[in-house]
Image: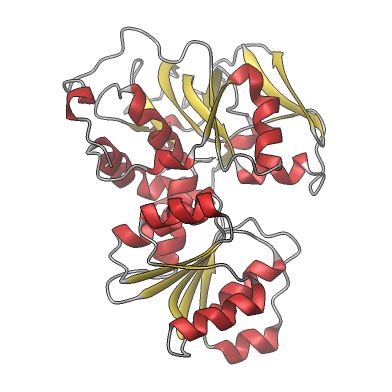
Length: 361
Ligand SMILES: [Zn+2]
């Protein structure tokens, strides 16, 4: 099969690798319909994390080709979505809704889903089957659910976004933009997006942002205070992972407010005295996307939400290097990669083709 490998910073190649096989009886093998490049893949690409001959990718949707002898709820031919942590779904942590901290978790990035095929550990706990075989127009949104939408959703819930609340979103990458969408779905009254890029501002407004603030850091906080009567936001989503973004998020929250932080933290150090005096709630980390997948898949299936709009570049898997370049240079927000054979034939489709119900958003 073809698979994306990062040999070193800036050096992405697509290579022939051995097809994955069932290793544990709880595994499944899926044929990828689509995968994508994550903002977090740019950290090693830019040399900010060590990388050497690393398989890449942790976002995936596809059709099940084979299951191990202990797999019960997922079958061959199912179209499935999973998150970037494989999880058993049965341990106490999973049952509490924190599958990204499952005691048996496996990080999908170590398997690499920027490939034609992937082995999915703990298939019953990890994968969610869609109601049928999705039309091609739904696939970008389903891939988005695999990470960026689920992560934005967790951030919005961790920030307690909801009716009557003002939500501020730090970060206008795919996760921040879908945090806006999540806050809108959760009923937030006002959503203030920090962004200085016209195209991302437009997408943020399309997903439900009511206000845009172009300033960053403490200038951004000052502008947000003007917009909120000097109080700050009830809820703040942090979707970057830098020191400036984290402090901007904490300082944007009003006393008693909530910060949901999901940007992968890089050398962030929160001063204890400032945290103590802030009176804000902090919750975040690797998002338990699996918790939200059934709901997100249904919202996408019913065409209530269209998170696939964050993809502004689609490339064949073999051109992955070009996709990394585009995201690194910010000429693309989010890149979708499509393997050569996108969907296996003969998959069951118990519901009628959704094509006829296509509505424009
Ligand atoms: Zn678990």
